[in-house]
Length: 314
Image (cartoon, rainbow, N blue to C red; front, side, top):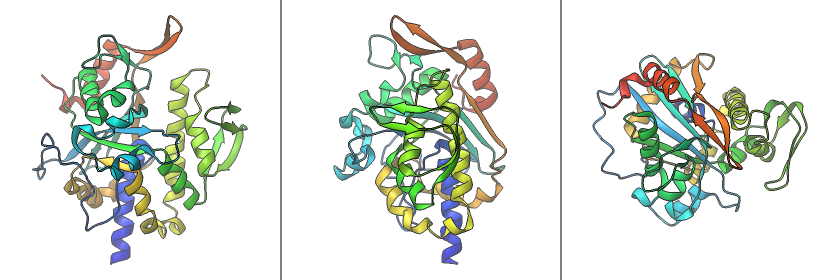
């Protein structure tokens, strides 16, 4: 029974979070509340909620410790969480999961999207919001951008990916182009290959695609699906309890524990081949010498009404 719980619980977390962000989100411990958030703005009465809308943010810290882990060791909570580190988000995905149907909807938001950030004089890249005000300013920025009712977040450090990929024996990826970069160091040749943890970070960090950040988003989406296939192999399910510390060290969220348990009960409904996944409408554009992603307001409004209509603000 205990083994079945661990398997079901962790698969639900994978489907609920790694599936969303490709990275992960929780400490896998049934006796400890997974959310470390104690924020008043998050409602705790959730019995009537059939789905969740959450902002998933990946951060990339090169100092070897991990941004999420550093903040946890300092016991920083509330709206100051992550703020002292000044880290920008490297990946941002808006995810919706329906507990009844198992339907998953994902919207990738390019990190270079030019937006208004509260408290700033000029328009800036959306990934700057996290460095100015942590996850809550990121939530507010996405709320303002898309006009949606958003209150939950998951922040995952890329170092979690490295540890988990090594633990499960690597991830098979068809690298599309020659990947070279000096800082951070990236050296991958094109072709089908099994990437270890460090190589997976190289693959996820690489940005020099012909279509810029959009190419990187496509590559990350491919990684998510291949990572899931490898993680859910029977032999790797036996490793799940051992990975709990990795999640605790490198993942932070304000999603209440009872919502996670709803994910546990509905995990079997999720079909990995039936995921609605798209990217914010728009195109890359240079302003001076700086590259930005300029979102299309009309197409974005139509897309949000279609994908997240129940969450639109008046």
